[in-house]
Image (cartoon, rainbow, N blue to C red; front, side, top):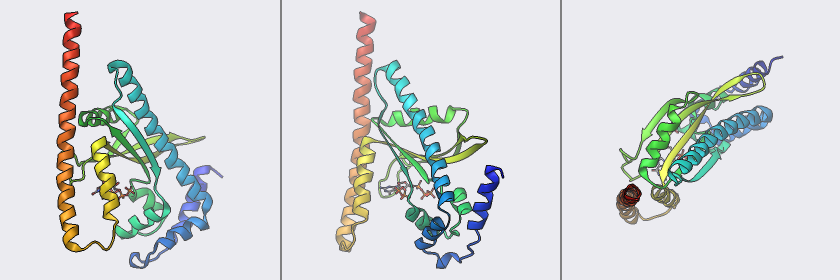
Length: 244
Ligand code: 0O2
C-alpha cells in the first residue's frame, strides 16, 4: 500500500466523527489524537518539517545580510507547533468539525514562526525576500503594522505554503510567519499576559486598555526614531568612506 493511500485511510476514518459543532469539546480532538496517535504524529512531523524549511530560509537571509551589510536584521526566531488543545479551541471558535481535514484546510498556524527584527524596515525587506522565493506561495497577508488592531497590536502576518520533500512525495504545507520588531514583540507579550488576567474590575480594565494602546503608539514611535538614528549613522559612515 502506498504511503499517501495509508494517510488517506487514516484521515477518512478519523473524519467519521459527525458531531454537531455546538457540542464539540476540546476533549473531542484529544480523543481523536489518542485513537490514531500515528496519524497525529505524522501530521505534527510534516508541520515541523515545513517550519524548519522556513526557519532555515530566514537564517540564510540573516547570514547573507550580515555578510553584505555587516548587521543582522533578525534578533531572534521563535518556532512553535500549536498544541492539540489550542487547535481544538480554534476549530470550536470557527464552528468547524473536529477532523483532520478541517485542521489541514482551516488551521493556518499549526506551525508558527515569530521573526523578531530590530527595525520595521527589516520586516518588509525579509517578507519580500521570502515571498520572492520560487517554492513559496503566499496564502494570506495581514499587515497590522500599517493597520494596527484597535487595541494597538502590531506585526506583519504571512501564511505561506512551502513544499516538504518526503521519501516518495512532495507535500505543500502551511506555515504562519509573524514578523515583529523587538518593541512590538515586547508589547504583544505583555498584552497577551495581561489579557488572561481574570477578575479585573471593569473600570480598571478599560483604563489599562487605553494605557496599553498608548504604549503601543509610543513603541511604534520609538521604532521609527531608532530606525532613523541607524540610517543617519549609516549615511555618516558611508560619507566618511567616500571621503577616505
Ligand atoms: P497563539 O498562541 O499566539 O498562536 P487565523 O489564525 O488566521 O484563523 P486570525 O484571527 O485571522 O486567525 O489571526 P490573526 O489576526 O492573523 O492573528 C492570530 C495571532 O496573532 C494570534 O495567535 C496571536 O499570536 C497574534 N495576535 C493577534 N492579535 C493579537 C493581539 O491583540 N494581542 C496579542 N498579544 N497577539 C495577537 P493566537 O491564535 O491567539 O494564538
